[in-house]
Length: 379
Ligand SMILES: Cc1ncc(COP(=O)(O)O)c(C=O)c1O
Image (cartoon, rainbow, N blue to C red; front, side, top):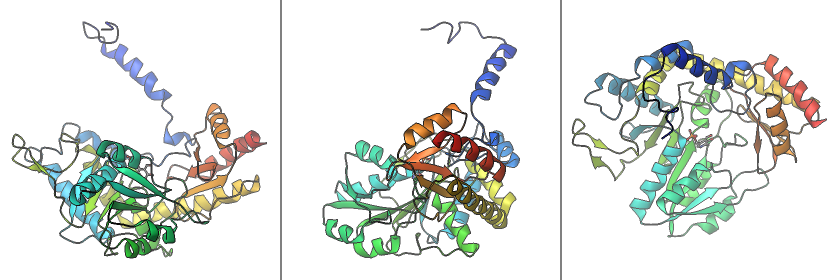
């Protein structure tokens, strides 16, 4: 064992804090104005404060943590009305979109006995982890010329070996909403899971702001499960995701030493801090606050579009939400060079491009400074 890394005797408080502060300073902060590639943002003061108040609470032990259990139930009910989930749906508070996607496939595999899952080309890489863990086989559905799932091919691919079909509302690379309603019609009784990790807390507010948005949630009868992430556009602290299922999950285990509850989530012990922080954030901002924040993100997205077009970049699609991606053959090189210059932008693979997520921490001033730097990099 490295004795320096795990010292025999405890070190000085001051000495420890010096090292911690240095490490903390090296993490790029959203407030730096240099982060354009993240789907998370800086939490509000109230969010941080409430998070730190629940540091010792365990959502996995509801008998012991009755307070956070109540907050959790209220959040899950409030969000279920945003996504038209039935009153008796099952909701599970989990740690991220990845966990939600694993739960969806786990359940589909168990209930059908099948192992093949149809994934749109846009599907997040978390589905590959899910397939590996669950020994399932991903079958990719090609996209049409608009980067959306090819519905004719979907029809051809459907047979009785399929465990589930996935649709995405807010694709990671382009922020597209896939035609979930049409997909539901095609797949019939086959399990349809909607990955709304990003879009789930954007689309409802865009609708309220008067944007035309396709149906994507439990409003569609064929949607069986949906995951959304408050730690993305919900502005909660990390990690927080909610998994909704129209029907109760068939699998659960008894957890006798923990207040006699049954557990359905993958993780047992899990922090109550983010769900409590999200309860506070939702109540502090109200729907009006979220609408204002999202309206500003959309205005900034349009501004970014204008600025990047002015330096010769072509958008891959007209953004539907606050994700804007631009054609760029040398995307990997450009992203690396921008990183060297202190900027975090990300890239798309299909097609190759530069990707910007216009989160609440991004403003026009940051966009101007980043555009200047980017124009030097792409020449
Ligand atoms: C559409 C989509 N699904 C799932 C995920 C995975 O979420 P997490 O990293 O919170 O597990 C992401 C992450 O960006 C995503 O964009």
